[in-house]
Image: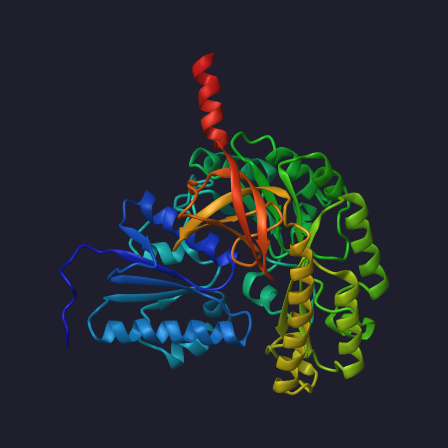
Length: 450
């Protein structure tokens, strides 16, 4: 029997899955730091907390493999304790406890106080907005709501995250101010459904009012919207986007499919006609707007005719950004009662076809940017390039702007004006004009002059 290490405890938080999990891990780390505990993100530590994803098969497999990897390290004496939290644990806790009993404890998505207690820490209610960000210093995710009330047939998120619950505008402004004070200049607003924001607290869709409050936070340069729902979209958001320069002309709106009978089976509450009308309104209200969407291929009952309709629609719409996923048959969802009748190889082939079309569209749109000037933020330096993004690009999923670091110098976190010199499918190459100072530096200069 091995003995526990005598080293001072260090907690290693490992994050899997989406940006909502990133946010949750950051809150957990902020709580641990406030308890004066040694905590790090995806570094070595003798106590491991794995924040899991349970959304689709691939994500579940990655989460299980990560748990098994750290349990093995525990058996070998490399770590002392392993705790598991997040969506997979929320959804499958009894099964996990039975199949992987060597994990010290499992916690669901709403059991942060219990997890902290198991780690020897107290849950501090007063820590509004206090967290340790794990993203590059210039941007951070701001989760404006938890859970989801939508009835989408293919989605297990309500099982793992519960009903929609908005955070108050006051709470979110405080959180944004604390992020800005720590050097964050870009807020990426996330939720399971941004467009539902405020219905529970204010009895109306209140995303526009939230944006109007957030743009007043000093030091914030960009505000980006992720995960909007097409049914019941609050169009006053478009007015704010058009009026307020801080609100990026960008929206992530997963549309999932376009064939009417598939949309009905998916319980999306919309049709092809309504979807196209909404997209037309987006482009009319905010000229030059970038629309990111995601699609699902291989949903039960999807015929070749349905797929051809989707292909033509993608060609016609020419989305600036698009991702495509194969349908995952998830137990306890409404669609699980349907026959998963599209073979896996057909699903993959359809996804590849969609992405080939999108790759060509993206290349064509990028060619139009050559010779034009854009404002970028510099996220990082990688090899011989500084890697940045325009307001039309979100981290990790969208286009990147590469500046030759052997010829030019940029500072991570700064904004710069660049000219696009070359363009590929998903990468742009640029040369800087004059680097822009960070908003905080400008505010400091003004304060000094007064």
